Image 1: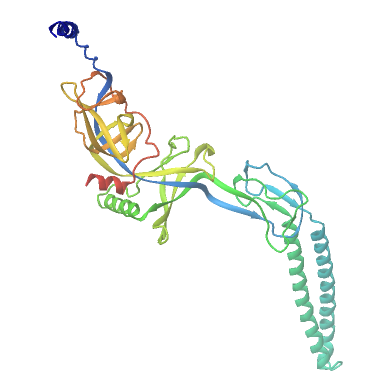
Image 2: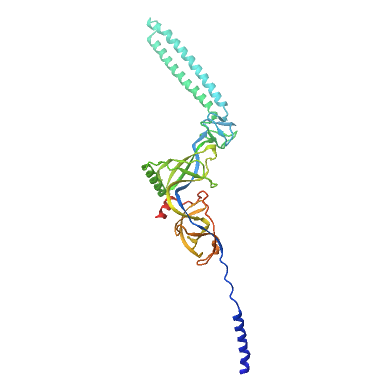
Amino acid sequence: MKRALIPALCGLLAIATLSCGKKEAPAPPPPDVKVATVLQKDVPIFVEAIGQTRGSTEIEVRARVEGFIQTIDFKEGNPVRKGQLLYTIDPSQYEAALAQAKGALAETEAQLARAKQDVVRYEPLVAKNAISRQEYDTAVVVQRAAEAAVEASKAQAQRAEIDLGYTKVVAPENGMAGKTEVYPGTLVGRGQSTLLTQISQIGTIHVRFTIPERDYLYYARRRQEAGKTDQAPQLPFELVLADGSVHAEKGRLVFVDRNVDPTTGTILMEAAFPNPGGILRPGQYARVRAAVDLKKGAILVPQRAVSELQGIYNVAVVGGDDTVEIRMVTPAQRIGTLWVIDSGLKAGDRVVVEGVQKVRPGVKVKPETVKIEEGGAPPPGAAPAAEAKGAQG
């Protein structure tokens, strides 16, 4: 029995000796991350909405007489001048109608001349009782009837001349012509005034948009306050185009609808923007915004520093001992590549802007300090003014 225990004890002793000889694995080095001190600055609060551009004046060019289109005399999508020929409608039937009206006018004028001669001839005769008073009175009535017939014939000739003029369709105002809706050989004007094309005046471009009722109230109150403090009562509007660029010219509000749409809770507004060079065209979609307030000392961080999971936003904050702390934050509007943080951060905090996926709470890191870039225009996600104001409270 003792001999059997000896090998077992030797084996245990060997295992113990090997275990004691193992060294512990070295701890992994702290991960390299880039950190930046949060930016603190005053930022504007915007009322913002999606709108569609339109000309300052939109003119529908329609056929005013019936006929077949003979020629199209303008280039689609090009500027046109007031009075410029746009279309020619077959004038043959109107030329014939004018000739007939002029013939009828000549006939009634001849009848009037004869009636006047009768009155002139009968007047001395009735004074000498050479003819009866009844004959003279009849001649006077015939003259008056002939005069009325002449006036009616003149009106018919004038109408025929106007209709003939309508066969030459000209531009009513200067502007940008759209595409043609008809082509040579098309019958127009039968039973209705056929739409031929549209002309837009785009020296000033207008944008129609709707905003929620609460944003309108916020804007209206700020505008009213600006007027009371002798500031500019017209808060300037900006136009953000589809490519993210901001239109160089500031706009002004020109129209607010009389009522709020009860089905959507929104109100229709319209702003006007100078359009030098005619870059903007009717029908474009764009974002309209107006700065209605200023958030003092706002905290901003790069958007890439904020992580989101199921509606909860977090930021990795690096403490003085380079240890990571994960904080829950409340983001507000975006400004360029930055995000305004309403709560969860304070001035002087350092946040991880690159390498967020490497860190965990309580982990030490090897930080490389970088500077937050302030460039960039406000992107599409800017929060409405009312929401930003509510977040402040």
